[in-house]
Image 1 (cartoon, rainbow, N blue to C red):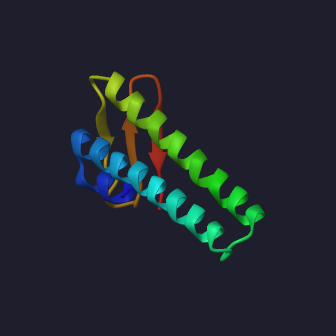
Image 2 (cartoon, rainbow, N blue to C red; image 1 turned 90 degrees about the vertical axis):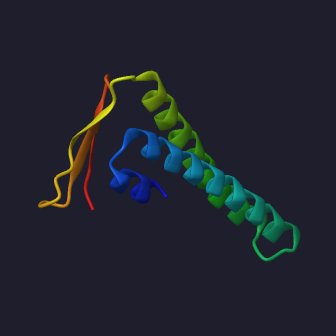
Length: 98
């Protein structure tokens, strides 16, 4: 979801796809709990994977908030030739590489 939203090239769509990614992490946490209830995974595995999914969700929410606060967020360079892209959110510039 994150990569697809970035590739769309508009800030609004990028934020929307980040929201989808955050929702997907919630679905994954739910499935992890169901798996633990049915003893398909151990409590240790639930804790390990669940904490990673929760961290992703928090980071995604922070990025969404940053993008929403910065009214002038803009894709500075798509870098199609090199496979990189850069976007700026006012206080930080992020470069994504494949």
